[in-house]
Image: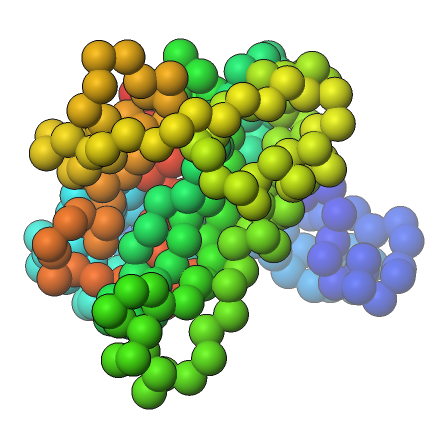
Length: 287
């Protein structure tokens, strides 16, 4: 039975309580749902009113879709296999991503604080290589537990600079993305945490700002190997192996990140949702 009436709360009416008011049949999962009526305002609600999937149809497909998106599946193939409209799958991607982001942070806060973490940027693009994106992620060393992810825009580089001019100026959001990530990480790591990254000169200032008592080590980047989608390194000992292995897992299991693929990202927020779905699956099943 609900504790508070949403209508009374919005109207600031006190002293509301409920009585049973019949059932209704929910066709999406073939269940009868109990309805209630508030005695104070006569507003009706049900057990489903306060559910995260309120008014969502085809909810029985959510788990199957979640598994496909975390296993290198595309939106179109998922829609075909699950007999769903592509627009339905796109909307579910956003909803599942929001749910996964909540559970990812909740699960990380419930676990012991990390003592050694690694972070770096993973590059991809939206629509065209002239519009690159940066994925800033942090993982716990050894366990490969994903602690946080942020997506930001960056400007085109190299030979693409001239071609990219037709899309206008593209701001570099990596510094703000690192700031958002580090603010979240402050609750998940110990004060004297050991932080490891590559030799990017922009990292040190942000690390010292948000983790003044941390020990920070930078390592020179190594050449990528053919295996692991170019994320694993051609070296006998990789000090950032946990991070690079996790990046390789992202490349292999999020289809829009696979190198030389035509399943490209069209919107940065949808990329973030897809990453969160995989990250939550990774921490629950592979970490």
